[in-house]
Length: 209
Image (cartoon, rainbow, N blue to C red; front, top):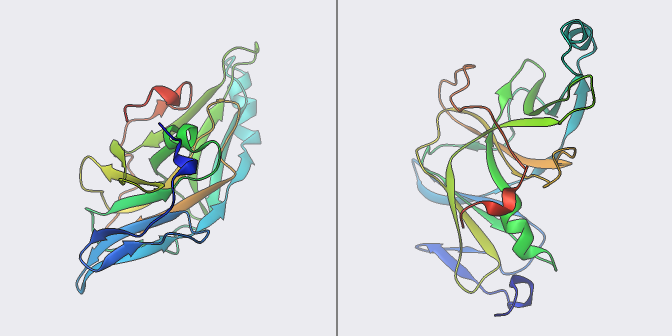
């Protein structure tokens, strides 16, 4: 069977009158449903920033906990705002590693802050033991759009109001994504974490297709 990168891109209609682009460099789109009907929205990438928590690192060392860093994206809210909690997402996969990259795609809830939104929380113990990369992943199903290089990502439950991102998480837990595709879901968002924090990326290739 030919790999994803060898397929000839073609227009894919995902809703009446709405098609995914066959070419271009846009990577992530959301099929949103607002008051005026369905619309395809491009979600732009933004750079991830590493933040060292020096003060808490000192306190953690007193109880033999390891250094703590978080990886965040600038701004308290994303520029792209979705109206529907039942939005589905489409991620373009291309290149020689398309088959592998399919299993790197994750939909994440972001911890809101006054200046930035936290994507991942990273720590290790002071004795050089296992590193821990924690994210708040939104349970989702994935499937390829037939005869295209687009991956469809469908949240298993309607999204709650808040901050989110689509990210390509490296398999190596010592690494973090350099960019994320961040967006907000409109409504009264809570700062309480609605998704259980769990290690991600230890072996994402085992993710159910």
